[in-house]
Amino acid sequence: MDTMTFVLFGGTGDLAKRKIYPALYNLFLEEKMPSTFSIIGLGRNESTDKDFQESVENSIRTFSRRLSDNGSKIEQFLTTIRYSKLDARNKEDYQRLLQLVKDREEELNIPENRLFYLSVAPEFFDVIALNIKESGLGTTNGWKRLIIEKPFGQDLKSARLLNQNLNNAFKEDEIYRIDHYLGKPMVRNLEALKFENPVFQALWSNRSIANVQITASETVGVEQRAGYYDQAGAIRDMFQNHMLQLLMMTAMHAPKQKDANEIRAEKRKVLEALRPLNKDEVGKNLVRGQYEAGLVNNKNVPGYRDEPGVRKDSQTDTFIAARLWIDNQDWAGVPFYIRTGKKMPEKSTRIVVEFKRNHNDIYLNKDPNLLVIEINPNESVSLILNSKNPVNGELEPINADYASSQLDVPDGYELLIYDAIRGDSRFFAHWNEVELSWKWVQPILEAFDEEQIPLHGYTAGSNGPDAANRLLEEDGFSWWLDK
Ligand code: NAD
Image (cartoon, rainbow, N blue to C red; front, side, top):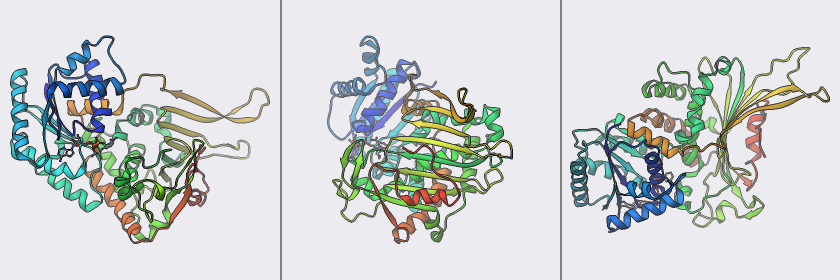
């Protein structure tokens, strides 16, 4: 693995503390970091290296999955870290940063391989990328890479503009767009489940599958993020990115090679085959909702419009359910139902694949077979089969299952950062995927803006508006496994 410098913009922020330092430290413990590396944290305030290292130590001690037996590993890790004050718009700060990066490269005798991680608000993405270029930080005789966090634009137009701006400083194959759902181990396992098992390989198409249900439900509301969320809603916060990524990963064909180009090409084909929803079809295939006061986990909670920071007349969606069709040979006729919402009864991200029943006069296939893939917070795979009860001889559904929750599973950020350090972009969103997702979502955003789509209220603690159930009932199905 190449030795390198890891430059973290937003190095004093919440994401850095909770996820990025713990991830880097766990990679270090597992000897997955390069033999020599330098980490430079950036923030807006003055700080000494020592104070900054102490704050990193605190975040590791609070949030790391593992700590070493004695303090020596943390000590060793902290010696790799330096701090520099930087305001995204101040050109002198970039010169100081460049000098620090170079000094450390020289001191450690490492090549100019530089990984820039933008863990800052999206308004800074393009200004930082431009300043990396103009300051000379991006002129290296090694490699350079850019990791950015969501949101990648607020609509098709702004996403395209942002991408153009980033492309002035970084080429597509240097940009690693984090969709942290692609860091979740069970999402990474989908490829193996589908293609390493002849049983599923044979069944993975409209010949055997009746419908696919992808749910990401949360019990929480907007918490401290009302300012952002009230502008974004579930459609931008979850649907355009994470939910469509889960759809691509579920429906994609086997790639010719297990490399990033082939995998991303197969994902792109799913979006290209996704039947566009014209504005006048949105209402027939998509349900939007907003939570009202109710009971979650036995606690009374206020409605969305009564949350601090939310407009009293907010029309923002906190729930989306949609029916999607993939018009290719394998998936024609199979509805994909996708649903995400806040203040629902349980926190669960899962994919349920309902198989077709093949009943005849003798064997009725009373209950359909289901493949249930739990992604978060639990990780499990179960297959629901029909079986004869040994006592009364009646048919009953049984559950053949596997759960990985007892294992010490790495956090998604560990996996993603490890990939980016090695230059493996398989589990990052390619621009084509981002653009096609926004393109598909754009008529929905417009239909929302023009108030063409009713905003259904749903009681906090419920599974969303009734209309979301009717969406499936129209096709003779219902949501599985709802609490
Ligand atoms: P935060 O507000 O806690 O931290 C922001 C960081 O940006 C701080 O280090 C701050 O010093 C820095 N910053 C602010 N203004 C700056 C400026 N003018 N110049 C340079 N640096 C500046 O935010 P966060 O929660 O750490 O989120 C960072 C990014 O990650 C955001 O884009 C957010 O949307 C995204 N994100 C966060 C989470 C999360 O769980 N926190 C999850 C997904 C995506």
